[in-house]
Image (tube, rainbow, N blue to C red):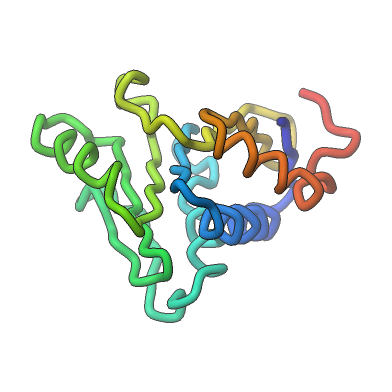
Length: 165
C-alpha cells in the first residue's frame, strides 16, 4: 500500500491511526520503519504514542544514543533506533524485547537488522522519495499484520487516493 503524506501533521495522524490499530491486535504486531535521516520516522512514532492511553506520561524522542526508549503507555511501547546498532549486546536487547508480552515493538532503521531476525508479525513501512511531501509503502508480514492492514485500509484511503510513485 502506497501513501502520500503532504505535511508533517499527516505523519502524526497516520501514526495515531497505526497506534490505535496496533494496540488492538493480538498476537502483537511490530512496526518496522525504514527511511533516510529526517524522513519522518520519529514523527510517526510520536503520533502513534499520542493515540495510546498513558501518552501524557511519555516524551517521545529518537532513542539514538540509548538504543531503546520505553514509553509508559498501554500497551507499553519499546521504541528502538537501530542506526548505531554495532554491538552484539545491542542486538541481543532488541531480540529479547521482540517477544515481551504487552509491549508494542517499534524499530527505526530496521534495515540494519538481518531480515531473518525480524518479527514474524509486523507492518514494515519504508519511506520513498517523491517531489513533495513524504511517501511511504506499508507491507504486512504475517497473518495478523495482513488482517490489521486490511482493517485499517478505510482509515488510510485519503492518503492513498490519486497517488502514484
